Length: 272
Image (cartoon, rainbow, N blue to C red; front, side):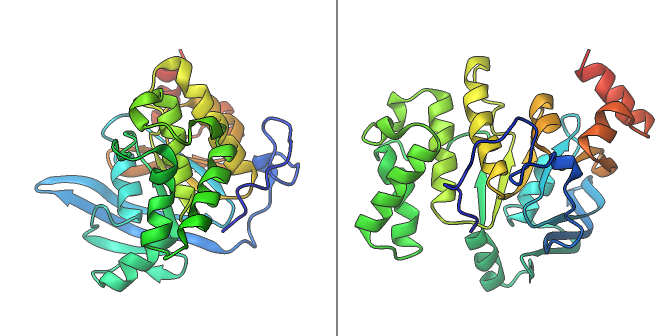
């Protein structure tokens, strides 16, 4: 795992190495997620229609699109929370098939943060973060608790360690959820609209944590409607509609010179 605690001060909109994110050359970086012609149906409804994309190591990809465009379905397929019916998904050189060993291997390398926090309400914050490393990674309790406190420091809420989730704000709970995902030392982080359930004043604190995580070099795929985050942090933006990728490119391309009329319409509506 990239050391998520090793985050240096950088100017907004810059990558972990000080270069503008969209100017970074990731062509020689290792492929971390490879999707080839992914299709997915729910009954007669086709949610994904031939989706193909590759995400490189340390790349931050933001997926945008209207509601119902297939964004969340796609990201859930990458962690096998949904099963694709056609195509191939390869995560960190492991293909997702019906082989449970492969599914478990992929999930052990991928952290995921959802719209809802899904914290255990009866456990203290530090126990929510340390539980999986103890039971899944077989990490000694003292070591897992030390790691939990370091991660809570990383996401900016070390003082909340001994509280229960119900005593925290929504933004604080989502930051606990991020710390919990990081506790498994993932190589890839997936975010499925992590701020959509938050009050507006709580969104920034979660996005700031995600920005710092991106600057640390974490490979990230983020489904979001936060245009400012996409413009500032993404290496690449993918725009989807009706289960297909309509357009992909750097933030500069996407926001200033999109090629597709559907992309232009989306931007005119959402940025109006």
